Length: 233
Image (cartoon, rainbow, N blue to C red; front, side, top):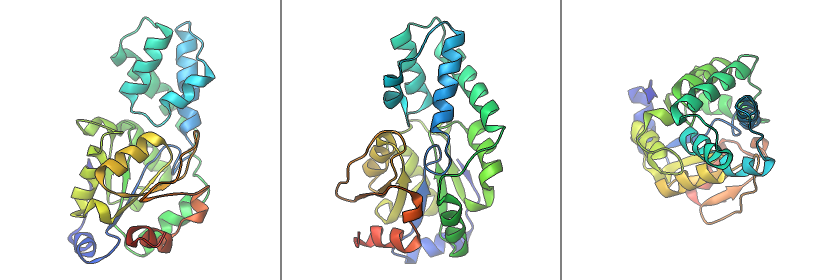
């Protein structure tokens, strides 16, 4: 976890109904879920295997170990998980080096959260090296805290990443609004006890108690997130 949380943000969290906003990265803030799949297709093609498009829904939003492990199992690729992880991260990093497109509404929302001094964290299953490259495009100043998938013992769908972020702000999970694009991420946030805005990127996500589903971040602003936490959505 990387944190630059000043005392002023912690004090803000203690007194507000909405104490923090915790955002996923790939497919939520940046349009990179397709980048990961393209990287996987290319790497496995070089290993002599063609990936079935149906497997995309299985691996989307998952941590590297789960996604890569699944693809190794279904293809029978002759490679270790550690070797494959390096190849996939290298290929993905090369792709994002050409630029990282923001999802519609992401830039406006991040600017609004900064303007109102809302404690904001980036919580991703991606590894630290990948997060740091993406932050070069998105802007580190938007986040007081970031949590990477290789910095926690158990990553999504386990609640640890979101519990770690909430704890870093001194915030109660039920007072945190999480924005996610996959069922894996939603499961992690809900298991942590957070309120969730789901913005599906690849596979559909159904509404549920404590969860609101929207089509785009263009539908989400600070007032919306405050309402989510206070039960007005």
